[in-house]
Length: 128
Image (tube, rainbow, N blue to C red; front, side, top):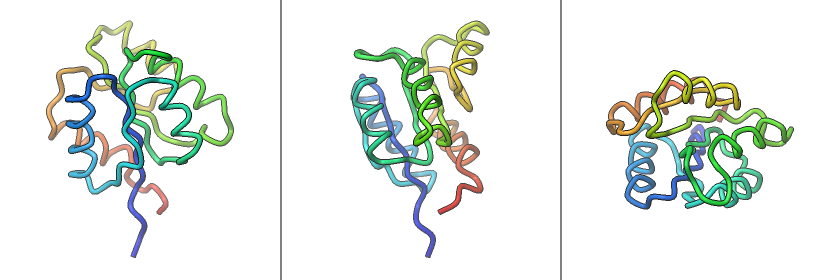
């Protein structure tokens, strides 16, 4: 049996973090860590080596954009997929997220179904 796709969730709002974890599990993936700030996200990503990292853009300690850039700069985490979540949904916000190295950008508020679809899309074909 294939190992499940491993996902790290980082959002400073607990209710959003729980909702994202629910969507990740509905997508058939495993949550390896759910953290509340960017510094924890970076430490967890380096320790857990997830297949996908779901990052809120606005977090304490380090923003999702900063975490994404650091993940891309580190050979140990450069290959993981990154999904940014943000209340900022302007074309400039999205462009900044993609420029930081994100694979996808999902504006808040999002639907659970929409997030499940995005997680499945980003993890399709991920080697187990």
